Image 1 (cartoon, rainbow, N blue to C red):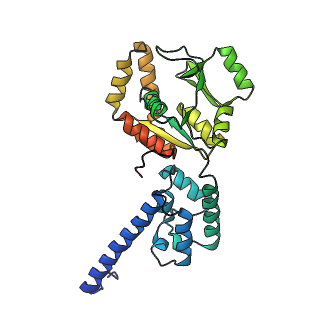
Image 2: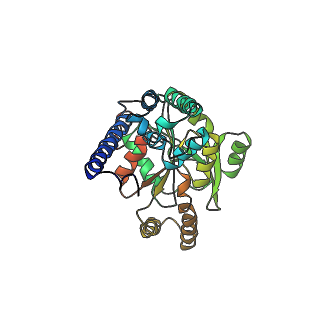
Image 3: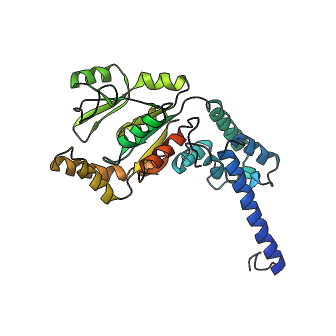
Length: 302
């Protein structure tokens, strides 16, 4: 017989009501953190002062996921680095775990006012360029990093605006000079790279930066700048992805088939990213990405 089974009916009902009240109280705390009314560090300190209180009953994982840019994947990575199990509650942390979490939250708070780096990647034809263009037009506070590429311009693309179009010799020189934050060969055809200096300068000045790059490039940025938030743009469905690729008419049938095969591989890597955004509506998807950049005046749906 469990403790609950041996409990009088009146006591069970009271315990159930208390549990509901506690869940609502914890949800209110998380909403306060999301809205900026309380800091995560304040919640943690409150939990350690009163381990049996509302804050003390919160799981560390739940607190971290209220922070912008921390999706499920990154949250688990942070917990592993701090030596804290995902099921641990704030009030149940040991001395060393509290010290590690306190220091991590302080460091994060110290750079909160600085520019943030968000990496936008996804399968071919998912609409990364369209979402980025919407952000460029409606959120000028965000710096969209301009990549260098060896491919030829598509109709309407402008050098220095959409890409820096360079030849192979120029690209080789930039690689040799360590000028790229990341670079990769895409679709076994052309090379793309993100110039390092403009990104570093913008972040240091407090501007947020959005990188629209491919999957391999996103992985390189994760290694070079682990504080970056990686966003994977998803299509509403596979059928819609095929329709978009065929409908734009910029590739031959052979190239379309090659890109669709690449897209299948790319979609399988989505779990490596911190945040998944479905591009079923350009405005909504763009605003969701901008929200991660913490741009002043951007809508918040956290």
